[in-house]
Length: 429
Image 1: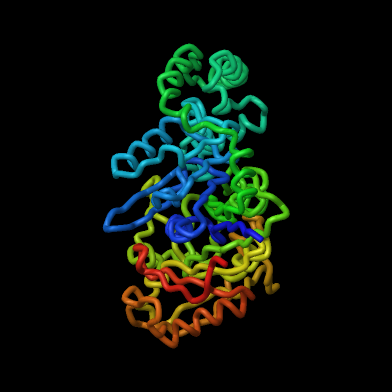
Image 2: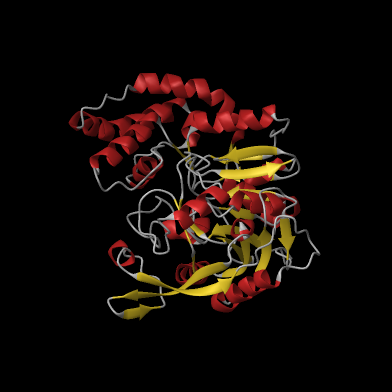
């Protein structure tokens, strides 16, 4: 029977999903983005060229892979067209193999404005959003005043949808001394973009159903990471959607009768962008060292990422939640020079040892992580290739993670390029 696959980040995002999706797509042929917006940045390096994809599935870099942006994604039309044009300038033809769900909601200029205003109003307690309008767009979707991509196919429907949205948004703008939304101006802007977008808009439910009936495997690609899930993450310091496995079934179509294997992405240490609790964060020189060696700056915003040691308590939670079948361990090379590598295995909170992950920020901010010290391998891993023997200390590190997480580590990424990848076990098949 055909098997579908999902690549899901198990931390606070930035685990290296773009590279792994790119690697797997050459075998699976259909890459589906199921949630998030252009606040995500998936960085891929191939043939000496660095690409950052924000909306378009990473798999389309292979000329025979079909990319699908499904209904759970919120789409900024201008951002989509910019990204599409950049790929086409690089020689990639997307005609007939890139599709947008007609049911995906559009991020409009007033969403970005609302995002910025919301962060400003929070004062000293911001969420740390990218201010790109993702959250307010999801807000309008749930409030049933969103504007779908399908309205670009019907001018009357577009006007009616905008009128409904603006009737709610403009009073808010007035109260915040923000400029009123001019519907005619916005319609003119969207009509100018529509010609470039319309050829990509399809019924993705039927598209994916047909692919599965043909026996084609689907590869689902999320944005952000499990600990930023709006229901299962460290609320309120979370995304506005479901990066975890649940987002696949609400943001896309995946036949429940077809097996789904989840590949969990784990960075060999931990990072977080923006605000929110981070139990294993290193505030001193160690954190700076991880940040510099790992080039830990946001692919979308350029913001520096906060850095710390691996947290197995949080990872156990994410592994169970997503039903992970194997792990891809990334950025292993960043730890090459450390003589000793601490790994968090439990927390202390008010004198009690916790072995489960609390999602409450007020608990996470006050607990103390307990570490197990593992010896470092202290030799370059980036020069390793498939078939090369691993350093003994690196094998011990992997074995320790497998024992604690009860999931095999199937792949190691020891650098950003496609060739800097070690296959320990098959991920697909």
